[in-house]
Length: 455
Image 1 (cartoon, rainbow, N blue to C red):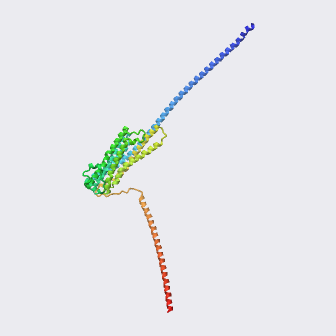
Image 2 (image 1 turned 45 degrees about the horizontal axis):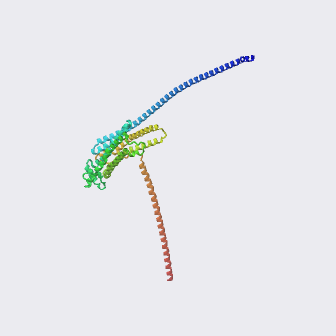
């Protein structure tokens, strides 16, 4: 019993030490958790501070990028403006020179207006170069929306000049008298092709009545065919502009849709009109080309139609080149492709207008050469201008002269050798003939001697 009473008193120190140990352990755990929590809070605060600093610096970086991009765009814009200004200056210089040359040429005709019925037509033709140069120059300096209107003006004057050239040929042939032109054509009725039957309602008298009636019908037909071009060409240009502005005939990705669109129909009508106009002009030219040979009408026609053909095919070639270069850059995004396409189109248009402005100066000089004012003075004789050159033609003539001389020398030597050969053969024949004669003489002498011995 005493041992039983003493045992709990011995366990009391052990349990109290355990309690103190557990309390200390719990305190240490709470302290560790607190320290870890504090460290986590500190780390979180530092991480947030770093994030805020990075965001602030990223914002500054973005602002710097925007400033750099803005500066680059501004520099590029200034460069494009400077480039455009250079193009405008060059085009303006050539346009001004072309206008000055043409105006001086016109004043030469006005000072020497000896045949007004002819020279009025020439003055109308001479306006072609300034009009082409000015429309191209204004297309460079005006907004793109104004270019179609200038194109309509250009197309109208192109068709008008074609008719004026036919009127020029008629005026030169008849000297202002239509009856003289009819009589001149009547002398060539044997190779005149009869006029179109659908124009018979315009002929009076009918072509079958006489040669002069046929000539009058052919002349009227040529005028009608050239005149319709004056009305159809600007009309088709206006209708095409309206269709394009209204969005009529958009392809919508179908490459065959253009052949069913109104624009294709307009192109066919325009080509038919061009064909009829030139068929009438060529028909008249072939009928009277011998009577007009003195004024060189074909050279005059080339300086007129050369403007149109050169500008058309030149623009087509430039457009094909730029579209080909655009097709090669197929690895770009859609946005880049659209911007490059607009830039290429503008560049192609700018180059085309610049080249036209430059070329019109040379066509103005060509008009000066083929439409001289002195040509319509009394007693004029055709002049063939020899421009400055390197003398290659004369050098080629000298080379041909030396070659021909060598050929003639070789031929003469061959003939001499042939003659020598013929002379030698003749001498041999003569020698053989003399030898035979001598043999015959000896034989005759032997016969005579024998006869003498017999006697």
